[in-house]
Image (tube, rainbow, N blue to C red; front, side):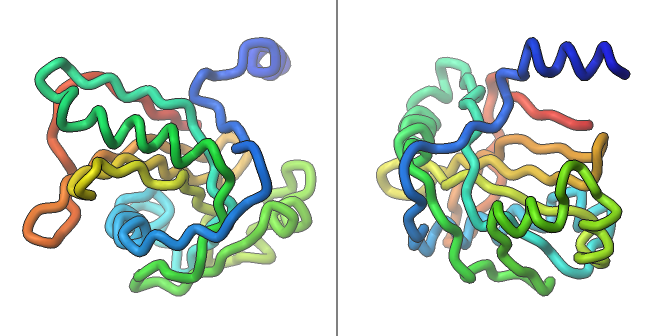
Length: 190
């Protein structure tokens, strides 16, 4: 266990979160909240852990872009991937605009630190007993006509409990659906 901890400190994952530069701004893009609401049910805390109350980190988090579409999908995804990098160069504060069948609350990094402390997940789960952990999102990257979206979503639920990855969606007939594309992506699980 100690060896794994040392390796994680010395060789951080390229998929590791990094905080965006600058003071957080209110994230107001209504289409981003439609995207978030569409992918929420696919996360482990809802799908497998059956959370009854969602805890969502208010501050967006940036994850290193790892989507590499094959050449025939470069034109389709390229603009949204570039926009992901652009929009996530600033910090954002999520607003209470999620459309979810589940009750949810947005919490700040400060509140997360106060309830979680230094890895005290028992305290977190006592404070948020029906949450099964917390969720986090990046800001959403869109193509120019907002028909392709790229977003990161992840969850943390314990010291060795969590996961996350990128979602690529396409808007068809007014609805956001997963886009089937070819290329490489990345995800993590603990």
